[in-house]
Amino acid sequence: MSSNENKESKGESFIPAISEFSGDGFEKSPENILDLLETNLPRYQTGSPEDPSRGYTDFDLMDCPQEIRHVIGQEVNNVVKITHKKESYGTSKAYIHGEISEVHTIDFEYVNAYWIGNIVVFEGSKSSVSTVQNDIQRHLFNVLRIQNIKLDPSIYRRLEDFPLKYVEGLQLNETLSMSIEGADDISQMRIYGRDSSDEYDRYLPKHGKISYLMGEFQFHDYQILTDISEDLIHIRKYNKKETDEGEENPISEDSRLFVILAFLRRLIEISRTKGGK
View 1 (cartoon, helix red, strand yellow):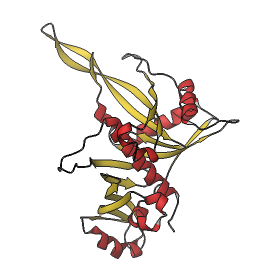
View 2 (view 1 turned 60 degrees about the vertical axis):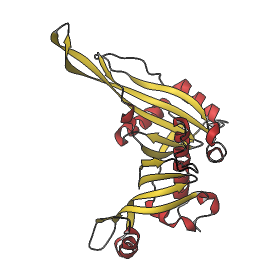
View 3 (view 1 turned 135 degrees about the vertical axis):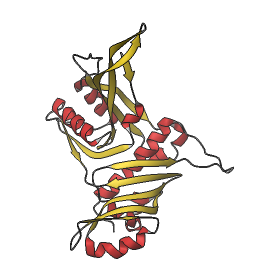
View 4 (view 1 turned 90 degrees about the vertical axis):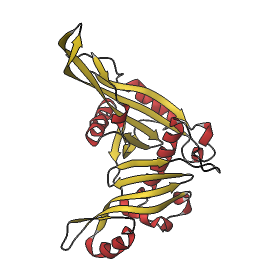
């Protein structure tokens, strides 16, 4: 049997949600959340072509790495992570002992879930995330409720209207593309290009609201090219800080993850305020 355990299948698409825990005296600490998930969610075990398996793995309480803790640790100090792993089987032709034979192949689909307090961010395709959300709630019925967050892409163009606690270390450097949905004689229009801000200001008052935005954000020492729609945030590109000599200052994968999660948390919190000053 051949395996195609493709890490890229997880992608860089994130669906934001809020988790609500019920139960007498349940303290929503990272340790308690991890224990609750570990105790109630079924573990992944290897399946077979006749009985494909799915389940949960990588139950982890992650601490902010030391190398970025002085900045990002103030934003996100602990993250609870779990991974849902699903098998799918197929067949393929292969040479075995000099003859062409039919063999089983296996692919894996992943959804990661990251708890940052009561915010939970799911990494994966929309359909896969929806399935995993329902599965988690089924196993934690009457204990955990997950509700997706509806984002407002338009507010990220007016970060200056928000209190400092929401926008410190964050700015939108450039808007690269937008979709505007609205009223009157159009239902949707897309504006492209680095000069799109003037076009946006010209069309928006008449035609409605932004439903999608692509922008380059500055978050502390990092540039992050991001797509934001009402139900999804996609990280297109992540630029690391350069040293004084003009070279990249590399950081570990765990550190990169924490930077992205801290960035996502900030975007979510800003959108949930439903306005600025």
